[in-house]
Amino acid sequence: MNDGPALSIKSSIPSGAWDCHMHFYGPDETGNTSPVGGFQMPEATVESYNKVRAAAGISRFVAVQSVAYGFDNSVMFDALTAYGDDARAVVVVPADVDVDAIRTFHRLGARGARAYMLEGAVLNWNDLPKLCETIEPFGWHLQIQIEGEMLPDLFSLLTSLACPIVIEHNGKFRSPPKIDDEGLVTLLKLLDTNRIWVKMSGPYEMSADGSSDYRDIVPLAQATVAHRPDRLVWATNYPHPGIARPPTERALLDLLSTWTRNDRTARDRILVGNPSQLYA
Image (cartoon, rainbow, N blue to C red; front, side, top):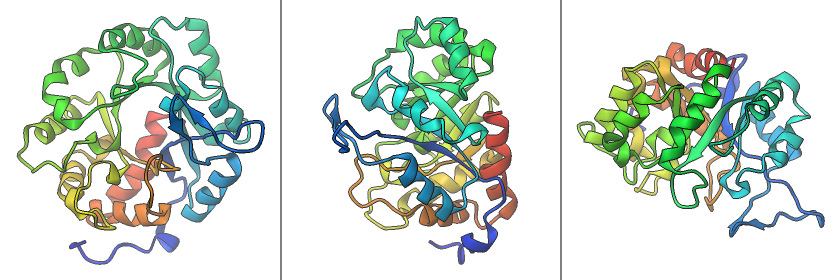
């Protein structure tokens, strides 16, 4: 990290900070986590996440339906009964989902629908316009996971959809883009539509240099913050599925200080103000 010492997270984490992307994985009847659809689930229960939440100073959070469970959101909502209004949710639903189901999910805290558009997807591109038309009246957004290199080809589609869009994991490029790469330029253009948000999360999803501070994605993250800090939210991606040696959540908060160049105003906006607006 080349921008000076990170802020002291213990003393400076703002009141009301959000974790905008985490997953619950429930144990089976024997108490062990089990594979779902070929995916070996890590442990992520109410008890384990409470420890993470307390250690990181997180006040509110957004549970995101894992691709492992398909359209069955029950494990996530079972966990959320412990949290009341401290939690929000992003569900996975079919394109022909009934409006009454969306109304029920909204009452339970859902504020978005997820479209995981990589291997293992349960939706296809043709489903997205219809899904967005259904969820838009509820003030929901579509949360989407794609590879950042796809953004130039998807610009017209994403900007034509009826509801706001949230892009996961800093864009999830296959490898860290250079500042003038078309994919990153397109990501910044999408932010300028005022209908697109980006989650600052999962740095290990694109980092290639093996460093513990993921220094090869610092230029992307800092460029995004410098361009539109008002369109960004932060997340842990707990329990970091598929990552053998994940960073601690406190380390991820230190990374955010680097990405914001130790600008407390920008950092606090990303942690508190922006998510309070997006997940109201």
